[in-house]
Length: 376
Image (cartoon, rainbow, N blue to C red; front, side, top):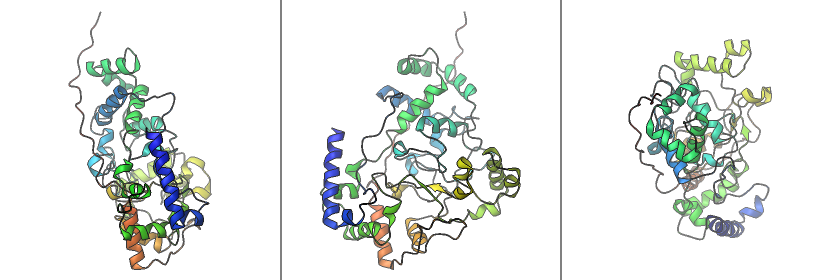
């Protein structure tokens, strides 16, 4: 059923784009369109029981170092599945150094995290749970905590057929749950408009759609169903100003340089987040970050890898001015010359890429206290 609906939406997309002249003008970029069915890896099939377990584990505070930082603490449904701050809250006693990206539609990314250092949700979950300034959890300890909770022992046996919970399985369950945190196209004005509902988007947003594909050239990076080419760019974005004055942020900043394999000099003189460079060690990749999806922007402010742009108006103004001035900026970013009204139209269209109501999941019921294991 989902594939049939997606095909119908795709055909409607082609018709609308052809009617507006967008497809002919921008054939070199994949046009915006409805999200396809969520891709599911063959080695981690989805089941209702696995998703339900994954939801519990996503909320489970015992899957963190001191029991204070479950996944949901930085990816809260009511604030766009992020944490609402410019810089993520981080593990107690530390401060993070990047914006907590929403997990909305993360199922469609081929690389996770701002610097693309994780190839799947199954790999992303342990990196977050065990990250020194994130969950700070130890796999062996978290696994043992699960084994002392009878309800989890029974659930893992049902879902995975194992005698005892294993953290590799816990991460598979969390990944399965995250694949349910996705946009519903029937609630997205743009998707409904493309499917033939002429009243779904305002005239202002329709003008913004033309700007998106034309004068503003957003389509060159934010294309395809996800509104992201999933590539990496340096936008010249300045560092968050707090890095210059907050010792805790400076500690994290220096430590990240060290633990990501930077040189001794880079560690001692660090003055910027180098992004993709940490993965490639190619100087040309300094300051590059993965293109985020533009879906659900209404609920996921603030924006950019360091949260320095608070609103969509700020984002459009940043690009209209030609991006930032930091070294290594991509030549794709140039002043746009948008008028005040055109900027408003573009913001209206970006807003239309979000559902008309936020995606909220109720808190699951978690198992109770630890119980002693039976001894023979």
